[in-house]
Length: 115
Image 1: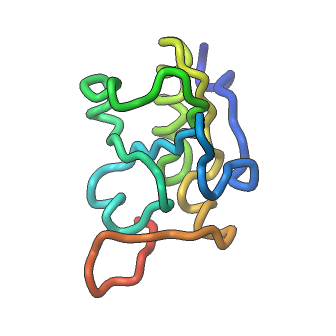
Image 2: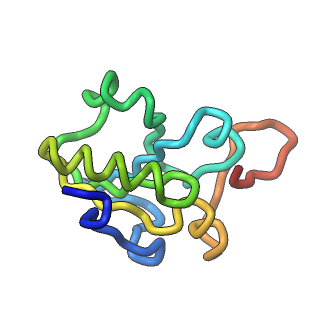
Image 3: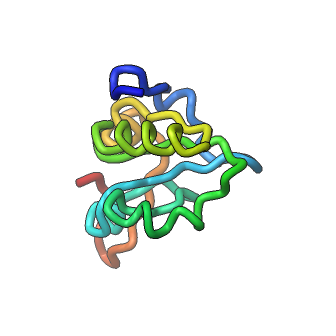
């Protein structure tokens, strides 16, 4: 599967609160996550994914998100080649925040924002 063939959805097609059997996987770096992320998302930075695959339910529908969609497209392709049912979130967290969806942060005294 090439990156051009990666299944993709818009942020409007992603549940704000993933249901049972769904995971929103955020593959951005720690500083990006701490600045702002979707509530309820699972954070596994792209560089740590192979070592942490056990944290990802193998029977879940996985929505993969990064900042704008590039890293998450690569992770989506990898997951689909290895037995997961994953889709890339087009536009990433930038599109998520721009659409008015909730963003929470981990930095005290700072409004959540997308790096």
